[in-house]
Each structure stands twice: as C-alpha cells, then as structure tokens.
Amino acid sequence: MIPYSKQDLTDRDIAEVTRVLKSDLITQGPEVDLFEDALKTEFSVDHAVACSSGTAALHLSYAALGVDSQSIGIVPAITFSATANAFRYLGAEVRFCDINPQTGLICLESLEAILAELPRVDAPCPGVIAPVSFAGSVAPLNSVKKLADSIGFKTIEDASHSPGAFSSFGTPPERSCSCIHTEAACVSFHPVKHICCGEGGVVLTNNQKLATIARQLRSHGIERPNDDSHETPWFYQQNNLGWNYRLTDIQSALGRSQLQRLPDQLKLRRKIADKYQRALREYPFNESLMAPPLEEGHAWHLYIIRFKEPTMRDKAHKFLKSEGIMTQVHYVPLYRHPYYENMYGEVRLPGAEKFYQSCLSIPMFPNLSEKDQDHVLDSLEHFCLNS
Ligand SMILES: Cc1ncc(COP(=O)(O)O)c(C=O)c1O
Image (cartoon, rainbow, N blue to C red):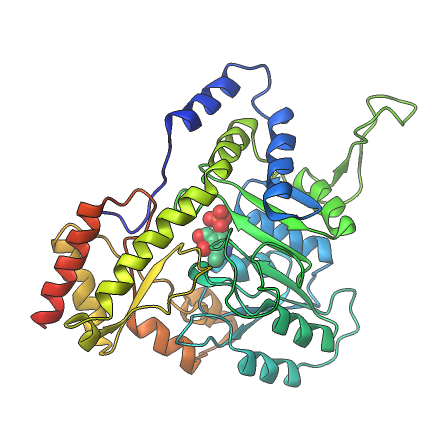
C-alpha cells in the first residue's frame, strides 16, 4: 500500500541514534540542548523547549501563558484534536472557529464574531487563540494577533504542519514558527511530519518568561540552576505542578539529523505538489475535483484535494484503497466528536462542514517515488472518468 504519509529515515539518522544509544546518557544528556540550539537557529527564535510531543508543546505553552479553568481557548474547527484538547487539560473552555473552505485556514470573520460575543473575564489569562498553519499553509497570524490584542487574548501558532512554510502575503512575508506575531509556535515531530523524532515536539518562542516556565513544567515544575551559582551544588526545587514531557537524547539526535534535511525535504514536497497541481487542473480531474491553491511557500505536510460532489469523496477513498493507495480525511470537525458534542451540544459551522464533506488527503511525503505518484494520478484519473 502507498500510505498518505510516512517518515523518511536515512543511514545518517540511524547512525546518529546508534551513537547516542552507545553513549552514557540516553536521556537528559547533551543532545537535547544541541537539538534545541539547532531549532533556534533554523527558525530564528530566541528559545526552543523540546518536549515529548506536539500535544505536550501545546499543553506547555498554554500552561506557561497561565491558561486555567477561567480561560477560553479558540481553535479552528478543522484541526487535530490536540489543538483543543490541550486547553481542556487545563480546564479551559474551547470555542470552535469556522474556517475558510478554500484554504482550510481560520476564518477571520468567524473569529471576529466569536470575540465580539465573549464576556469580558478578569482572569490572569482570559484567553488564547490557536490558529493552525493547516496542511503547511501559514495561517493569517498577523491578523489573528491584531484581533487577539484587541481583547487581551494571546496567540499561539499550531505549526505542527508547517515548519519551513512562508506565506504569499505580507511584507515581509509571514513565516511559520517565526513567533513574530505569536507568543509561541508549537511543532510536532511525529513520523508523518517534516521532522521525525518517533514522537516529539517543541515550543518555539521569543518570550523568555514563557520559555522558562515551559522548561520547568516539562519536568514536573522543577527548577534546577544550570550553573554553580547556588551554594548547594545539587540544589533543585519544584515551583509548580508540571509533567514529564521530556524528549530523550535518542529522539533529539534523530531530530537534529532530520532538521538538517528540512530544506531538501521541503524541496521534494514542493516538487511533488507541483506535479499534482499541473495534472489536476486539467481534464478529467478538473471536472470532479479542486486542487489546493498553489503557494510558493507552502510546506505541503498534506496534499488535500476537494471533490465538487461530496458523495464522491468516500467513493474515491474506497476506490483508491482497492488500487493500493491509502488516503485520509483531515479532519472531522472537532465539534462532531462525541467528547466535544457531549460538552458543547451540536455545533455546525458552514465552512468547516463544506471542507470536511469534500476533502481527501492523497499521498504526500518526500520519498514518494515518481512511479507511485504516477499510480496515484492514473488511479484518480480512472476514478474521475468512471464516476
Ligand atoms: C495540527 C496538529 N496539532 C497538534 C498535533 C499533535 O502532535 P503530536 O502527535 O506530536 O502530539 C498534531 C499531530 O498530528 C497536529 O496535526
């Protein structure tokens, strides 16, 4: 089967992991700092707090901003559960914002409408908006920040899909993970993402206080001076209730090796997207489906096509599977999941519904061979001609 996505591991990645496995420290050793330094350089940010998953990165950054049970977390309805769940871990209320069905990105009009109706809360952190740079396309971070600022909310970019992405608008263009318009950006290092650690994530930020708190919360809320300034050299103290969200040295070594290949990986993803794009805008594809808008700076975590006739999506999924091609739906709107429906009742947002009914993620990963990509296109062509 051709998967919709998968990791791309090289001999050097494996050698790096083996090197650490043969060393004295396989966790809490020097590799985590080295990976964090490399991440800071790559994304031109002041701080990087590596942690055990993208979910952990979201949880740490929301917690570090002071999100609690009085806060409101606003998330686009089309995203992975983690963007919203991390608010729920802290007891915050989640509000679902609609998305633009053409781009899959947060809809600013819907966001404005939500903000206009919110009660003013006198809490340490009244709320956080978490725009998702969905599929690898940069969310309108600057516009979201302006709206957030207007009511004292903070902005965290969920950049799980978008390391290396830049947008086509703005001067200079907005870059995902740059933290210019956000308090922090959270990245996932799951195997289907651009940088694979097995599991892993990072909080990127230019906010020193946020980084310090996130770093402590990553390891139980414990503060441990990293120089000999304290009179007792073994000194440490627990300031808050945190978690064990540490990344191991084994994962960090893999992540650092992968990070060095990010530019090449992006080139490969963009090349694959380009070939899809050129084919899909022609007959017979263009009769049945729409290709995503081509953006120069898109990071192409996902390549999502949209069927004009919603019933065709499920048929296409089934047909492609019979041809040995796995596809996926990104995503079921979060408000449709029983957990959220039980909590907030029935919510239906028009943009999210339209996107959800028609979307299908077809194979997109750097080591997708030309032969396999041709097979995807041939099968899709057959499907379009015969349905
Ligand atoms: C948009 C988004 N946010 C957060 C996450 C969570 O990342 P992780 O699986 O590393 O916890 C994911 C993972 O799929 C994601 O797609």
